[in-house]
Length: 180
Length: 176
Image 1 (tube, rainbow over the protein chains, first blue to last red):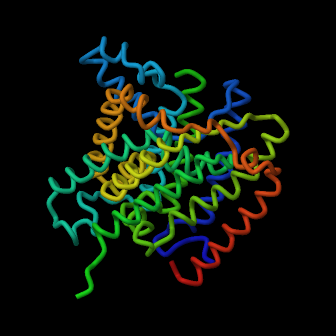
Image 2 (image 1 turned 45 degrees about the horizontal axis):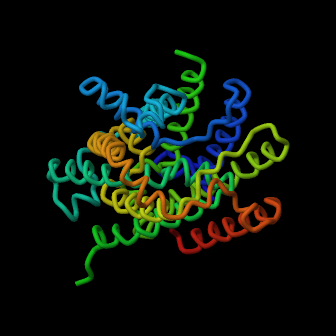
């Protein structure tokens, strides 16, 4: 097994195992320093970002919304974690020259053509639906898929199975090449 | 910045670095897994789960950290999970990887991120409705597999680990 892939990346087993180490260090560090065990996750941050943006236009609406009150609209540990992901990926990709500006991904282009507008609409609609689902299920592939599975949570096993199950069905319908 | 923000940012930078090095941020990799053609993201996730699980269960067993299960609300996980799966296939990113993908230059991730922020706002508006319908269906609470099966996590872990390793062998044999 190669630890470095052809394009200069790391074996997914190695990078994944190191992420496991990060998850352990992170729960320990947050418990020690912040007094509360924080688990890796991402989707709640989108709620807070929505609240922060919406608050600039409709402050009363956000202040009285039950869900925003429940999730607390503020820039917290996880919010900064999500921002950190951007910089981590930027540092990694620019230093190993895998950074690439891309407007439409190749698999998408094969099926739906090179239109940026079409891709934008797909990504926007897909993103909206996915986030409604993630908030309903109370987690995404980070919160359920990684943190929940590490804790052996019952909900994580079911969530991950449903994520991949439906993802596989829909992706097969959308992108599979038709045998002719 | 406060301490929790600084710690979050540093953790996120390492998280994003590893996601990018594992090459799991890309649309092709996410869709590749859903098309059952490229298992890179499953190799990555399952490796993280394998290592993280052992450390977290040890720390929790020693009562150094506390576990925080997400509720096993059946309707919410089933319906929400299915909605997520549909959106994920079209978008080609999940919430965490969309931000990372933008960091490695995938400009179209901006639309995915904007869509997700919008989706979150829509969810906040619909929350009272969901709360009295889908979320109210059947909630088993914040339960772990060990409590549900009434056995020690140290019995579950070797079995689960063995299944993950078997999966890895299968991926490599099939060249996925």
